[in-house]
Length: 185
Image (cartoon, rainbow, N blue to C red; front, side, top):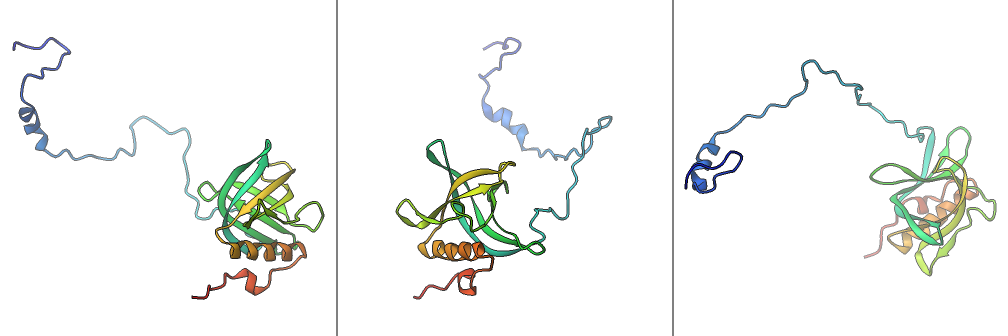
């Protein structure tokens, strides 16, 4: 075989000869600064992230999946902890759900006993889901939204109903509804 043309790899030699030099270890070094270059911004790590929930008491929390009715169809809004929170000073009770992974707020509204808002109805023949309408603020502006919240079990859905209706009445749910019950064996 003669010499390979420039830019062309000669594949006629056995690969074993080329691999003989690969046994040497190359120590890699992390580059943390590049001389003569300055970052345009610096990122600082915060000790504590404020969520807006600091002045609120958690009355209820349960992992569930939230849907929103849009364009004549139910669209998944997010999976996360559905929370009922009561402000320690004002006494205002709100529903809040953040997406589990991104922490983006996907539902945020005051729970009030003002029909047609906050009236729970069973969802699509399932006893594991509730549907209601609320004046939601999750998209920065208040909008009437129809929500559906789906739980893993009928018992969890029932506990939500008790807690939600207690919140509408202005109070905390009974202790039995706030804590999950142990299932009999």
